Picture (spheres, rainbow, N blue to C red):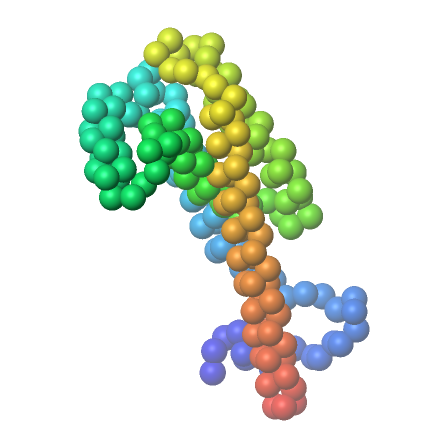
Length: 179
Protein backbone atom coordinates (compact mmCIF):
# COMPACT_ATOMS: atom_id res chain seq x y z
CA UNK A 1 0.00 0.00 0.00
CA UNK A 2 1.31 3.46 -0.87
CA UNK A 3 2.33 5.95 1.80
CA UNK A 4 -0.36 8.37 0.68
CA UNK A 5 -3.08 5.73 0.96
CA UNK A 6 -1.78 4.64 4.37
CA UNK A 7 -1.92 8.24 5.54
CA UNK A 8 -5.49 8.61 4.27
CA UNK A 9 -6.56 5.41 6.01
CA UNK A 10 -4.99 6.33 9.35
CA UNK A 11 -6.34 9.86 9.53
CA UNK A 12 -9.80 10.35 11.02
CA UNK A 13 -12.44 11.33 8.51
CA UNK A 14 -13.54 14.91 8.79
CA UNK A 15 -16.20 15.94 6.32
CA UNK A 16 -16.75 19.44 7.66
CA UNK A 17 -16.13 22.30 5.21
CA UNK A 18 -13.45 23.65 7.56
CA UNK A 19 -11.48 20.42 7.56
CA UNK A 20 -7.77 20.93 7.03
CA UNK A 21 -6.60 20.23 3.51
CA UNK A 22 -3.85 17.74 2.81
CA UNK A 23 -0.43 19.26 2.06
CA UNK A 24 0.06 20.30 -1.55
CA UNK A 25 2.82 19.08 -3.77
CA UNK A 26 4.84 21.96 -5.14
CA UNK A 27 6.38 19.97 -7.99
CA UNK A 28 4.13 21.53 -10.62
CA UNK A 29 4.93 25.03 -9.37
CA UNK A 30 8.68 24.36 -9.45
CA UNK A 31 8.47 23.00 -12.98
CA UNK A 32 6.46 26.04 -14.08
CA UNK A 33 8.93 28.46 -12.46
CA UNK A 34 11.88 26.67 -14.05
CA UNK A 35 10.12 26.79 -17.42
CA UNK A 36 9.41 30.51 -17.03
CA UNK A 37 12.98 31.23 -16.02
CA UNK A 38 14.50 29.17 -18.85
CA UNK A 39 12.17 30.56 -21.50
CA UNK A 40 12.59 34.08 -20.12
CA UNK A 41 16.33 33.74 -20.70
CA UNK A 42 15.66 32.61 -24.29
CA UNK A 43 13.33 35.56 -24.95
CA UNK A 44 15.84 37.98 -23.40
CA UNK A 45 18.65 36.56 -25.53
CA UNK A 46 16.60 36.80 -28.72
CA UNK A 47 15.13 40.24 -28.08
CA UNK A 48 18.11 41.92 -26.45
CA UNK A 49 20.82 40.77 -28.84
CA UNK A 50 22.39 43.70 -30.68
CA UNK A 51 21.32 42.38 -34.09
CA UNK A 52 17.95 40.95 -35.12
CA UNK A 53 17.64 37.16 -35.15
CA UNK A 54 16.83 37.14 -38.86
CA UNK A 55 19.89 39.24 -39.75
CA UNK A 56 21.58 37.63 -42.74
CA UNK A 57 18.66 35.30 -43.45
CA UNK A 58 16.37 37.65 -45.38
CA UNK A 59 17.34 36.12 -48.72
CA UNK A 60 16.66 32.59 -47.49
CA UNK A 61 13.31 33.63 -46.02
CA UNK A 62 12.36 35.32 -49.31
CA UNK A 63 13.26 32.13 -51.23
CA UNK A 64 11.11 30.00 -48.92
CA UNK A 65 8.26 32.48 -49.34
CA UNK A 66 8.65 32.33 -53.14
CA UNK A 67 8.33 28.53 -53.05
CA UNK A 68 5.29 28.79 -50.79
CA UNK A 69 3.72 31.41 -53.08
CA UNK A 70 4.16 29.08 -56.07
CA UNK A 71 2.40 26.38 -54.05
CA UNK A 72 -0.69 28.31 -53.05
CA UNK A 73 0.29 30.72 -50.30
CA UNK A 74 -1.29 34.10 -51.15
CA UNK A 75 1.18 36.65 -52.51
CA UNK A 76 -0.05 39.08 -49.87
CA UNK A 77 1.66 36.92 -47.20
CA UNK A 78 5.18 38.32 -47.18
CA UNK A 79 8.14 38.97 -44.95
CA UNK A 80 6.20 41.31 -42.64
CA UNK A 81 3.61 38.60 -42.00
CA UNK A 82 6.33 36.03 -41.27
CA UNK A 83 7.86 38.42 -38.75
CA UNK A 84 4.46 39.14 -37.17
CA UNK A 85 3.71 35.41 -36.86
CA UNK A 86 7.17 34.75 -35.41
CA UNK A 87 6.57 37.42 -32.75
CA UNK A 88 3.25 35.80 -31.86
CA UNK A 89 4.86 32.36 -31.60
CA UNK A 90 7.76 33.64 -29.51
CA UNK A 91 5.46 34.93 -26.75
CA UNK A 92 3.07 31.94 -26.59
CA UNK A 93 5.33 29.92 -24.23
CA UNK A 94 6.04 33.02 -22.15
CA UNK A 95 2.32 33.65 -21.61
CA UNK A 96 1.82 29.95 -20.92
CA UNK A 97 4.44 29.85 -18.17
CA UNK A 98 3.18 33.11 -16.66
CA UNK A 99 -0.28 31.53 -16.57
CA UNK A 100 1.13 28.53 -14.74
CA UNK A 101 3.15 30.37 -12.09
CA UNK A 102 0.57 32.92 -11.03
CA UNK A 103 -1.88 31.86 -8.33
CA UNK A 104 -5.40 31.28 -9.62
CA UNK A 105 -6.73 34.41 -7.92
CA UNK A 106 -4.06 36.55 -9.62
CA UNK A 107 -4.38 35.21 -13.17
CA UNK A 108 -6.23 38.34 -14.22
CA UNK A 109 -2.98 40.28 -13.69
CA UNK A 110 -1.36 38.36 -16.55
CA UNK A 111 -3.70 40.15 -18.95
CA UNK A 112 -1.70 43.29 -18.13
CA UNK A 113 1.69 41.68 -17.44
CA UNK A 114 2.03 40.29 -20.97
CA UNK A 115 1.63 43.61 -22.84
CA UNK A 116 3.77 45.36 -20.21
CA UNK A 117 6.60 42.89 -20.83
CA UNK A 118 6.22 43.29 -24.57
CA UNK A 119 6.20 47.07 -24.28
CA UNK A 120 9.30 46.96 -22.06
CA UNK A 121 11.12 44.80 -24.61
CA UNK A 122 10.26 47.16 -27.44
CA UNK A 123 11.15 50.23 -25.37
CA UNK A 124 14.58 48.81 -24.47
CA UNK A 125 15.19 47.82 -28.09
CA UNK A 126 14.28 51.30 -29.27
CA UNK A 127 16.37 53.10 -26.67
CA UNK A 128 19.46 50.93 -26.29
CA UNK A 129 19.89 48.74 -29.38
CA UNK A 130 20.77 50.76 -32.47
CA UNK A 131 20.30 47.92 -34.99
CA UNK A 132 16.94 46.82 -33.57
CA UNK A 133 13.58 48.28 -34.53
CA UNK A 134 10.93 49.04 -31.97
CA UNK A 135 7.42 48.86 -33.43
CA UNK A 136 3.90 48.92 -32.10
CA UNK A 137 3.10 45.93 -34.36
CA UNK A 138 5.66 43.91 -32.41
CA UNK A 139 3.91 44.84 -29.15
CA UNK A 140 0.59 43.73 -30.64
CA UNK A 141 2.02 40.45 -31.96
CA UNK A 142 3.86 39.66 -28.73
CA UNK A 143 0.76 40.46 -26.68
CA UNK A 144 -1.45 38.24 -28.84
CA UNK A 145 1.02 35.39 -28.47
CA UNK A 146 1.29 35.88 -24.72
CA UNK A 147 -2.49 35.94 -24.37
CA UNK A 148 -2.80 32.73 -26.43
CA UNK A 149 -0.28 31.07 -24.13
CA UNK A 150 -2.13 32.41 -21.09
CA UNK A 151 -5.41 31.02 -22.42
CA UNK A 152 -3.79 27.62 -22.94
CA UNK A 153 -2.47 27.68 -19.36
CA UNK A 154 -5.88 28.58 -17.94
CA UNK A 155 -7.56 25.76 -19.89
CA UNK A 156 -4.93 23.22 -18.84
CA UNK A 157 -5.11 24.35 -15.21
CA UNK A 158 -8.89 23.94 -15.25
CA UNK A 159 -8.61 20.44 -16.75
CA UNK A 160 -5.93 19.38 -14.26
CA UNK A 161 -7.88 20.86 -11.33
CA UNK A 162 -11.03 18.97 -12.35
CA UNK A 163 -9.05 15.76 -12.75
CA UNK A 164 -7.31 16.21 -9.40
CA UNK A 165 -10.65 16.74 -7.66
CA UNK A 166 -11.96 13.49 -9.16
CA UNK A 167 -8.82 11.57 -8.17
CA UNK A 168 -8.90 12.86 -4.59
CA UNK A 169 -12.64 12.23 -4.27
CA UNK A 170 -12.16 8.70 -5.59
CA UNK A 171 -9.30 8.06 -3.17
CA UNK A 172 -11.37 9.35 -0.25
CA UNK A 173 -14.34 7.19 -1.26
CA UNK A 174 -12.06 4.17 -1.50
CA UNK A 175 -10.50 4.98 1.84
CA UNK A 176 -13.96 5.31 3.39
CA UNK A 177 -14.75 1.74 2.39
CA UNK A 178 -11.82 0.55 4.46
CA UNK A 179 -12.85 2.40 7.60
